[in-house]
Length: 157
Image (cartoon, rainbow, N blue to C red; front, side, top):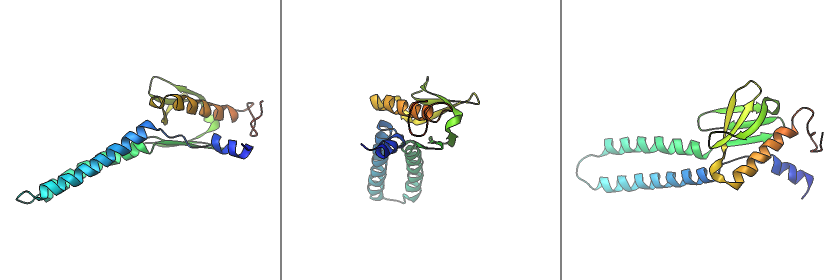
């Protein structure tokens, strides 16, 4: 493996696996269920437009939430980390991140230099060994960009 390929792997985006697959599967079931609901209720006598619209709005709201859950990610680059959680997005410079840890939540938490904590829902405990490897990779990125730590070529400091 070349050094360039290793660099690309190090900066690969973080995404949850189990939560993503479950969310996308449920979206498929909801869309299929809504289509089946419309087909079956259309055969009943009377107007069902209001019922179809109400069910469609509810289905769309649930699908939107599940899509937001499935699309969480943390994207590193040499300048920092963009964390996209379900409802919030934040760009962090590497210098702002003090520690990477699995806290009391089911996802990685970043302790920041201002004393706050930021969740990284893209690395979730439910993913087991993969989540632990991702948290170690994120911690290595933080250490790499730490002043006085490893330099940009990956050598020791």
